[in-house]
Length: 142
Image (cartoon, rainbow, N blue to C red):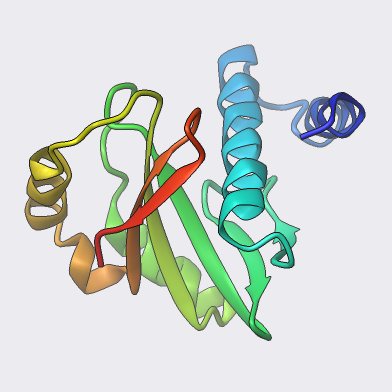
């Protein structure tokens, strides 16, 4: 992401999300950075439609609207999947994707497999990935 684009996004967050605490705004900035880098790595033609007012990002991919939720297990827990399913219905999304974001390479995916099973992610999400942010590597888990 170019510095100018990043600056514009952070200003948009400051203006649109003025009601959020500083830490919530920081989480939103991280969400947007993850989203933009994921799109650059996965499919640069993917169009970002909405990201400000919910943890689930809405994108247009292959003519369909899809939701993408990012989760870094080192810094947060897996969100409630029932909320994601309600979000899918409310916005008419064709698919929901769940993305485990990692900063360093994790060769053993057992921790992700455990999180998928414990939280029934494979039931609620159509596709599940790991995304190594710094190496720009996306690995499908489902």
